[in-house]
Length: 441
Image 1 (tube, rainbow, N blue to C red):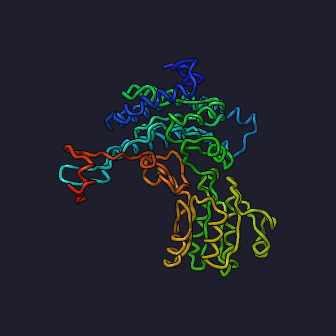
Image 2 (cartoon, one colour):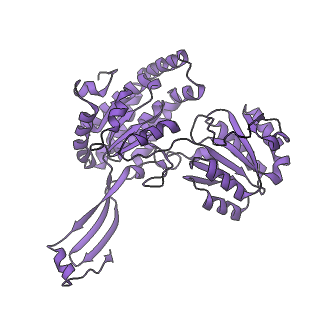
Image 3 (tube, rainbow, N blue to C red):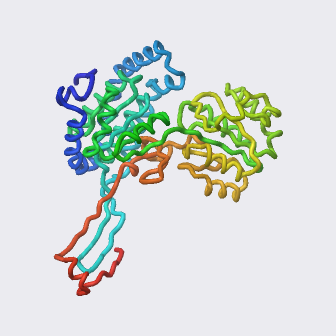
């Protein structure tokens, strides 16, 4: 295997454009969709073996990316995502093992109906086709995305962040080699590296079936506004935890600390704490003590500052704030409905939690908060495809159409209708000679 190629374009044709490549992938997508599940699972096993076999080369490439990040003064939150070490290696190989164990998402019959004698309709799951994923500077994301696409029978165009150029390059090489060795089509995967290739990809409306952008709000909006290809994704993660008056402090403090500090750079890390005003004086000092011990900086307005020391927020400053750092906004609210109103207005419809011992209040909150994930007494950090048992995820969607929340195998699946007839014609039904009897089988 030749590692370190500048782009998959070089392996196919140095004169090829992104549109040329996606045309070939479009032709390869039905072939991949028909590959048996045993072969797709074999590809996952070989990918795991290949990554482990080249671990030292991968780590060396990652050190190069990290050194360049330090030279370029990359933000700490971004640098944390860049690192691919033994811990990340263990995570991705474990995810590949779990993903291989999941049932085949292709070919599931979700509707089986007899329209008339000898006329049977089935709705059957199938891959979307060619999926383009543009994702942040996180090497493990490349492994997760490519493996999910292959398991679900989708061809994938992958464009990672420039900060992980060297790590992504070798990871893609070992993944692509293993997939082809298992018997998948050579055009099942393609890695784009140049920023200019993103704009080329946005023009491929006749060959690319879905785009999944992961990144800043402005980046996702740019993608949505410059393509006619369907887009699935989320812009940012302004996640909340609301501490109700009927709270249990033994749950509340650990939940908030975990939601904020377990992985601060993640989109499902909590960014704003809403506190019922009736418990503020007893709860905030204890929360402040725990947050200080965890190194978290607190921000709030006058009513919060009267109880605990915080960095003062300006009155006209928006509550829609994604810190991705050890910083937390705190706001007092009069009741659960005020908390719901705040979340629906200032949140990003990602993941939000209520901390309460009152079941009725919890259900009220969970029914009315308009987010992809709504939790009761659980850390927002659970919003993750692996933790949901999806194997991994290609991203988290705040859309309400097709897929919502962590997008795993099911989110990469569409369906087709198969009609089995025995010579029927519509004219007989239009004339009244025959009639439908619609019987679910």
